[in-house]
Image 1: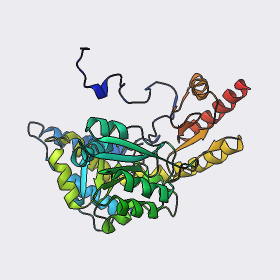
Image 2: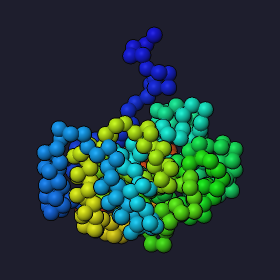
Image 3: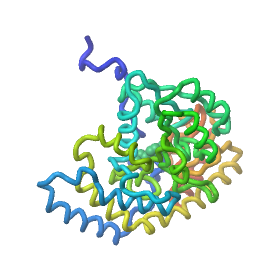
Image 4: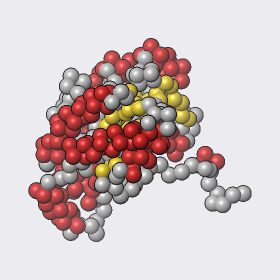
Length: 363
Ligand SMILES: *Cc1c(COP(=O)(O)O)cnc(C)c1O
């Protein structure tokens, strides 16, 4: 018997995570390169200071004030009449999605996604003893709706998990894909992971707009990306109140600390400022796509704050070459592709210079 006595499904698995390497240009985890302002940091500090005086008590288990703030924010981005009863919050949307699998997955049930997609999804399935099935995307990373419907009808998943925009490809789902999935899934729950929702291009609707039509639709969001708050760990979902109540059954007591709740509520009050750089990042993204294509590379259409590009016969060599120039990107996605997060104009200039140098060295 090997030690420690891990269950079989975990033997040989490594903890998930991108390398955390301290280099000048960090474009590997899709963070917002613009941090909170001094005014926002002061408000967060003041709110946390006030919360600190109550830390002898457990926090509000239901995080009601925060959920009210989040509902209000969502109503300005495609949500319709959402209240705290429609919203649930947790330590990052990763915890949100694990809780969804704990509530709706489990032994004898299946979760379905379409690859290439977020590599954490199979881990939520593994950790909740849910069977994992992955369908395929087209070569342009879009979803063939007929094939996807057939897959859902064949697999009968308890949970469908799909990011829109997708990570690592940047591909957004058209609204008809979301309605088709919700209808085909029947009593299954369809989770649309909009971690990058705020970066979507003009005219691309949020799945939030379809919540009134589909009782099995769940939209997951996070403050980690557009909101520039990855360090605070705050994710949330919007859905029908029955779904929220089901998730409440599996959450750990007091899962969201008073410090987290105070920091997130303060940050929400600064939403316009924190989100203020999203427009600049979108422009920078579109420019990056154009520039990479001008270098003769293949580039996936992106509605997110990152771009997937390739293809390289030895992508690891390119990734390492960039690292030698002080630029850290992500070696992820299908063979031969690399993903770069959108940084400041100066960071993007350094990335472009480094990539040109690395591609010349390879010639
Ligand atoms: C970054 C990311 C998240 C966000 O994770 P948090 O736990 O909220 O930081 C969720 N889904 C996808 C697809 C992501 O890329």
